[in-house]
Length: 388
Image 1 (cartoon, rainbow, N blue to C red):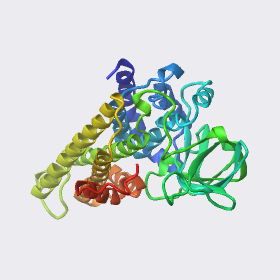
Image 2 (image 1 turned 135 degrees about the horizontal axis):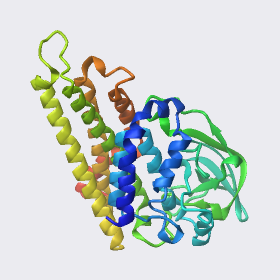
Image 3 (image 1 turned 90 degrees about the horizontal axis):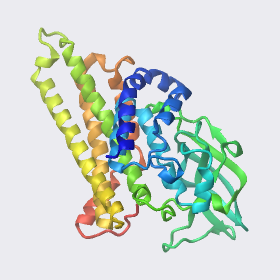
């Protein structure tokens, strides 16, 4: 861990108590408060992967896993928003070096938000595209400097085929927020503070230089931070889930320390063998998740530093590990919520927020249970159809 990485981690850990204290405010606002966003920027959270040549910190990926976990432990939505924002350079690096430099000319804290699913259409018109579409789950769209939506490229009125047989070409289209619309759709059960509203454009002309290929593009910026953007993003989702689960265990230990009695009994919950089992199982699961995720993160980072592509079989295993971790995190939170008894459902209990947040996270496509099927297929020698 370098000096900048250590300093950023220390700054984040110093902030976490204040972030936790504002969780209700973050939820009710359905976005991060602007003053908190400013503090996170000042600490360096959104420049952790920006190249040093462009004023960023360019920290190692393993430290970023600790940072995201710590923020999610304090507040799930804050961890998620920082996760999305800090990955901005990885997406912008899919553009030309010239455009990348232009985007960072005003500072290292550029934030982009948008939709990965190709829910738009883009028609090529010379050196630009004419774009129409509406995209869901644009986390952080209310404070982002740039928005994007992934599109199917249309040619002669029908989808243009890409490099893979039978698969249409897709490209993400980037635009300034004032050229599109944010549609207030984020009325949800969990991760409420992420501001993951829909965004939309109509007949918008976008220069070809402001487009990039999310799933098939190659980074134009050198360095291990840009080698595996999709795997890094998925591992970060695992870190958010881990932070939420660890928070649930922490809350149960705090509850036990109050000598809370079980209803209709004279014994405390801490003396209950069932409670002890649940806590032992939950805490062990958290340690197992942390160990597995950091091992997989270390493997990906080592490959990136060695300029070695991660082969399909390893990618399948890593995605399976992330998916297992996210769903194990949900089972940990479920157990803690149940063990908390009658106190758990109250809004004053962080356990109910952990429950809602983790079950929203497990709906993400990056941790769909089909990834475990892909991991199993890979073990059997079948890697066809695996694509991240």
